[in-house]
Length: 139
Image 1 (cartoon, rainbow, N blue to C red):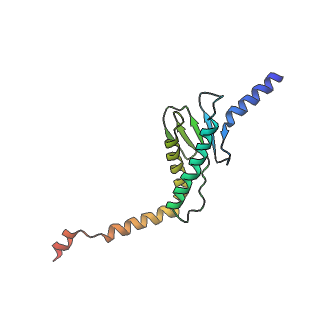
Image 2: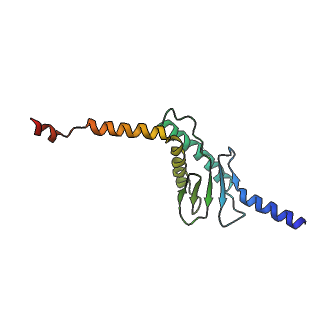
Image 3: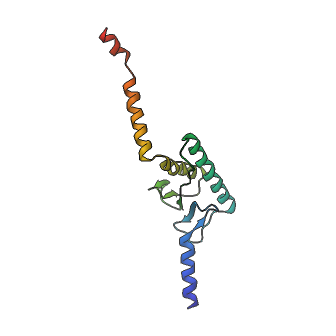
């Protein structure tokens, strides 16, 4: 009985992974159940997360506080953002982690209303530009 409880606790612990202090992301390793980032790497990840979210927020004023929630899977076959819930890394890489955070934070900014506004501006800009050759042909 004690062995069964210990096994269940181990499975729960490995399934949960290593949470950031803010709780916005969880780090897990897909192949090693006992894996965790070092405390220095975890602090680096948390610092990168907050800094990168702030950069996206500054570039898109009025977007409110950006704090995407996701899982970081380490030990995957490819480095990629999968869906809008996972950053997959072959190994811990701060630069690729930050790029993934940009993508996930940008997704929070890119609401359907923002998409419509940007598309409308793109159409307006396209119609506002006149080719000089077109002007010459009419005169």
